[in-house]
Image (tube, rainbow, N blue to C red; front, top):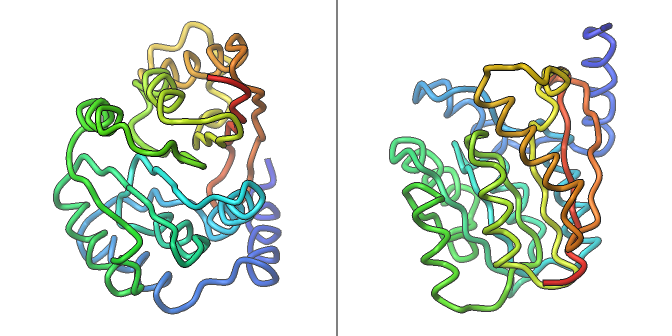
Length: 223
């Protein structure tokens, strides 16, 4: 693959439509300073999430996998004045970095950060019996992606958009004999999306600064 060309095109798109301000740039820098992995979405993917949010008129958003808060900031900035977001991060150190970045972005009033395993926290959110979410973005540990999808459906309504990042794994999903738990996790999710009649779903291959991967997008038809 011509990765250099893909990156140049990605930069071209970002310069036109997804440019980062200083807060976003400093958020990326904060990951290096704190020793966090550089696994955030790209600027173009952040802008793509904003476009999806506006398209589905999202006022309430759930995110699984906060890391340093980069995608959180992109998403929260697209919320309306009365919009709310819950983001879940399993690692407390990551969460501390993210909270500082969220505060620096002036989004503390819109974003609630919860620390802990999503598999533990999601049942609690369901038990709260609050209004369903308009969009759910999952960019967390890959092995339980299928379980995250099952929980996401319980927190949705007809029209809710559910988005999963990193579902192609540089084409490794094609290997039915893979022993990689991350690959096996997204394979289970992708198969589940193909069989579940409660959603209409597709997967977009992505290339660019994040190399070769893919995003799964599902619209809930019924609960």
